[in-house]
Length: 141
Image 1 (tube, rainbow, N blue to C red):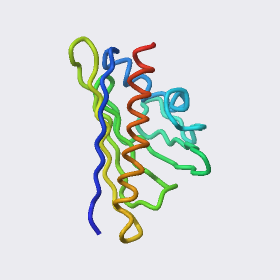
Image 2 (image 1 turned 90 degrees about the horizontal axis):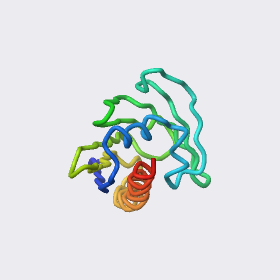
Image 3 (image 1 turned 45 degrees about the vertical axis):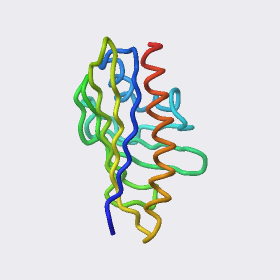
Image 4 (image 1 turned 90 degrees about the vertical axis):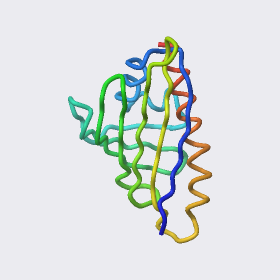
């Protein structure tokens, strides 16, 4: 099987530290994204190691934060919830023209042969809504 990749971008008038503050607060994600509900299964004072459960429609995903650099990036891996293997997302935030450039980059392998293209298409739409909502919410903070 081959590795699939999705990359979406947005710009915000908010500085990078405001963008990554929203990313660090897993319970805020439903406020600015298409995610319906969020729970923190395992809290972490350092953000890294936090395990988050998100519900969107009937789908529940469990994700673990594996890296966090305030003002720069957050990285998480899918623990369970989608028929994907080795799902890893990194959200990069860079200072640009008084605001932020945000890049949400995900890689994964589809567990079922022939479904990678479908998941790329679905995730591209979903993650674009995520990054657009993040950019807008950070600017409103």
